[in-house]
Image (cartoon, rainbow, N blue to C red):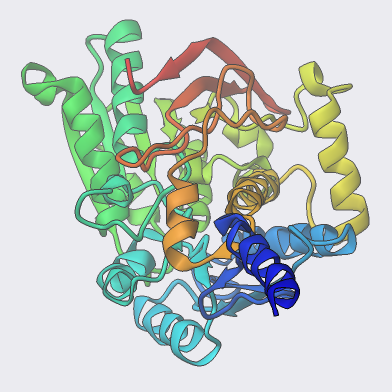
Length: 402
């Protein structure tokens, strides 16, 4: 009897000594073979130019799956068209969480769209991860633990433009066009904060527009009449392009700042007219495939090869595609850090534990860094100016942390 007990004790001891990490943990949307990720994108509607982001992310996950997946699991990317309509986003988010049972939502696009599901996602304790909008409120780790941004936030970007105007044109007369929602108002607040109370009088005209409007031509005519010599263009791609074109056609020649989300050569400046876009100033944190500096760059070359193989219908010069590719690489890193603990709690824990991730499609000096109370992964940019063919970066990399 004694001889039989010894082997059994040894077996029990061995079982108890197994590390906790070896025990797999899953929430809905995760299994031994799959990680189900949900997304909404405006594949149609007034912001459909952004639809290519969802397509580039889907292409990236196809590549990852072809290469064996993440920790042996394939990504099942479920993406729905919400037409940039908040009620549709609510409907699709509920479907993704309650019917499709995704592990988390990733890169849901648009400030109004994400605002509509913000409280719901946090109530459900489902990650709303790396949202495709730079609104400042996505960085509120204390009150909205389950929501995290990715790109530099709009208020910080607005402050950087204001700082540049004060340095280069302190007697400027400024006109502003902005989208009449949280996205537009976030930029507006940052810009005004950057100017400071004593410089508020520099703003001589403001005009807003609604997403449902067909054009912003009348707003541009109104703003030109103010006599402004600086123009801040806070619009989504369709309207930003209209504004650039109308300004040129009117013969108005202000110093023209365009918010980063509408700085794409492919989806904004080309439709507006490259000749009409000369001189436009914006920010950058991603490498521009048209920049000669990156002609032989390993990261850009790798991106071009990816586009050719996995998204051949996509426009390689549309910055939205290198954006989608880079943010997908970020969430891949988060999921690799999760290992076999694929719970929603751990997804957020790992998303808030990215320590200086250096991706080769980011401008040198810019990295991805998060912490338990730091939900702003990218906090640095560089100014750039369009020369008719491509952007030329100038000045130093500017961090909003300093």
